[in-house]
Length: 220
Image (cartoon, rainbow, N blue to C red; front, side, top):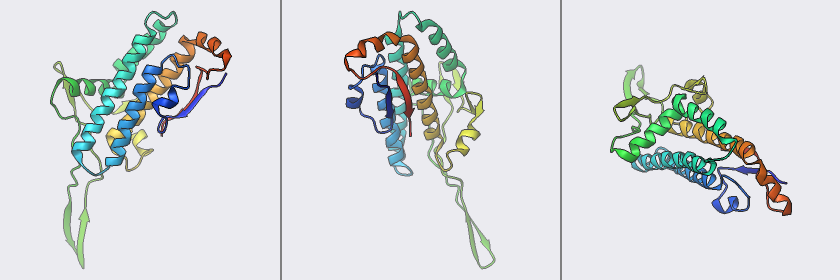
């Protein structure tokens, strides 16, 4: 039986169809989230409108991935314990909570969820010329308000500060770092759920169908 080892950044929905995956519908949404992320990368410092639209697409797709997991796993014997674990994380982890609430805001309101880069360019005369300074490139996340509750951009994820994660991605804007961490979380979630909740699918693969067991998955 083979494991599913793929590069999420390059995999296609057709690639996924080659595998007997219990969570195929959720993985399809992850591919959609990755495609939205790639649009963010392609836009870069270009059109803010296009970047904003790609971020909103990402939020929608990553949330649908979780919803597809819920539907597929409903009624499965080993699901309830894992469901409780991940629902608790989604409610308490600052990054996961923010991503979910930002998605709700994009769906049910017209509020902004990110702001464009303010270069804050300054020119100061110095001996023999002019000194230019500006703020580091970013497209900061904005607080989002849903049903009267306001959720601030995350300062932590899985007990580590966002400064820790951003130092590992120098020069990468805040929404992209958050997207990368969210994708990694949901891939790990689906790895565990697939291997714990649906081990019986492995038995069906004896006839040569590529296996359901999920091995390492590369995000970026």
